[in-house]
Amino acid sequence: MTGRHAEEPAEHRRFARYLQALDAVAEADEADLVTGVLRDQDTTMADSAVGRHMDRRAADLLTDPRFTAWAQSMTEVIADRDFLTRRLHEWTLLRTIALGKPWTDEELTSASDWFQRTATTLIVISPEALRLLAEHGRTRRVRHAASRQLRHRGQPN
Figure 1 (cartoon, helix red, strand yellow):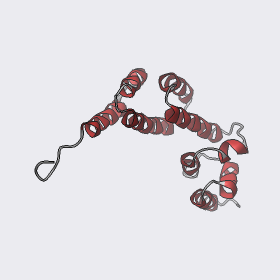
Figure 2 (cartoon, helix red, strand yellow; figure 1 turned 120 degrees about the vertical axis):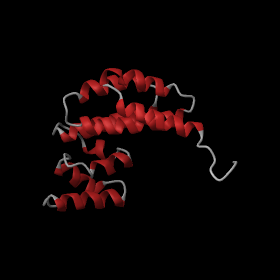
Figure 3 (tube, helix red, strand yellow; figure 1 turned 180 degrees about the vertical axis):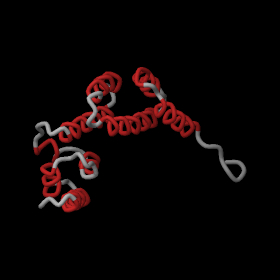
Figure 4 (cartoon, helix red, strand yellow; figure 1 turned 45 degrees about the vertical axis):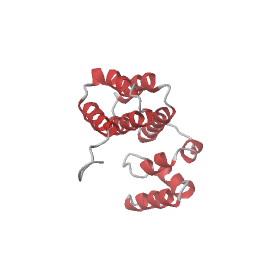
């Protein structure tokens, strides 16, 4: 390091550029851009940038009919990335619950801590899912958040 402020590492600059580009990308160009980001030599950084983008897009599209086409497009692009594939699968499960479609107790209770925490923050999540998480969530934090959300909605635990 030289001087009072060291130059920001190259991967940090690329990460910031990727996030900016992903934030501004047109839907028609999204899959190509994601593919390009995932070609970065720093796979952890690339997965993180794409993961943040997917979280933002999935949340925006959660109850939108365009979600299905978007998810199919992303599935093709991220097929060899375990973390991203699991995250997209969990967003799809959140969508299933939000749309009132069938889901199983095991899907919720075996989902990641991230999924369970996220589910407790979404307004569109059913009281049934919240009750299950309040009783069987993996962590005390999830159980407490689900119980609090139910109380806030005026629903019994």
